[in-house]
Length: 220
Image 1 (cartoon, rainbow, N blue to C red):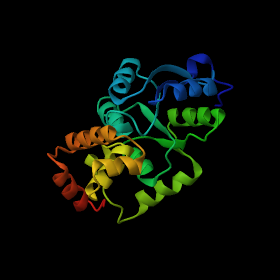
Image 2: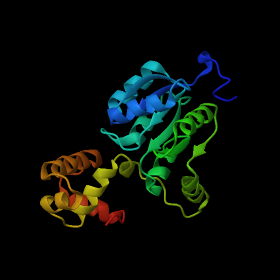
Image 3: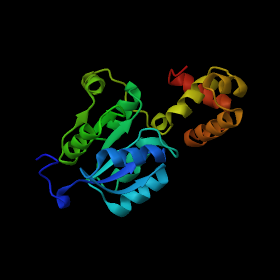
Image 4: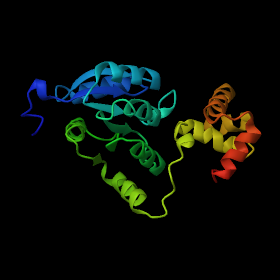
């Protein structure tokens, strides 16, 4: 069944999760009347609340979100609501992001270069039970799940956002906060905030423990 032949009552009910409000507005406009957007959120806690409140057919989920990332949303929602389907929509096409979010329970992953019609079609397909990937991303998933030596998922690492991982690697390599800030084009205060968040999520006490943690996982 195509989106043209679906009645309004049959349109997938969607929650849109992305930390950029202007992007969410753009997605709404692009999708038009092809789906019914019943709610939206910009961070993990609000996403979980909105999803539980509206019980949508599908969640359109960004990978990098304040509060733990898309993987954290998947972990908290699917434990209680296993029938809700998730389609990741991200600017990132990094293999670790794709594999992490699929292992977390998403049914598909498309990048933000997708057109409005293509996105609507992907939403309908995933809501109907299919798995959908942007063409070059499908190879990551096939390789990851077919390789006998594929590394196991690291739930601790998956709790970190992409920026937190970048900060972690630099600090673990011995960068001072000021040097890490310069490397990433962010403020020293922002680096400090990310380090504090990483230490809290990983239940570590200081940067020396952080360095040992990263070295043990061959992240540096």
